[in-house]
Image 1 (cartoon, rainbow, N blue to C red):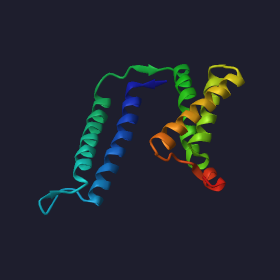
Image 2: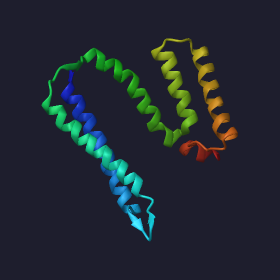
Image 3: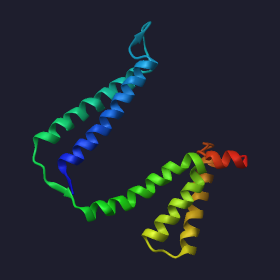
Image 4: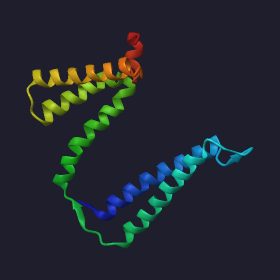
Length: 155
């Protein structure tokens, strides 16, 4: 069972860590004025500070307000069935590249979660990945990650 307090504390902690990481990175790059010009880390420093301040506010509010249940175990299971395959997709991109990982994710989603036929699932997955390839790598000339597998195969 997940309560409002659990959810807000988790979200506030994650966004606070992100805000602090942006602040530290901005300071390392250089934030402020240098010879009459704004340094490149100034805007990210301000944005990171806003994110960190908002996160701290949310963390305080999480412990002050009411604490109703917002997700029961069966609801959390349903969210996990969507989130965990997406997490696997993202985790496999450095190894397999976005195209192979994308085919795997789409096959999983269409066949296992939506109970679509294998042939239709494979056709949709292949079509989507081919469209992704031609849109980004050919039309926009933006290389998407090919991963370790792509490097091993010479792409």
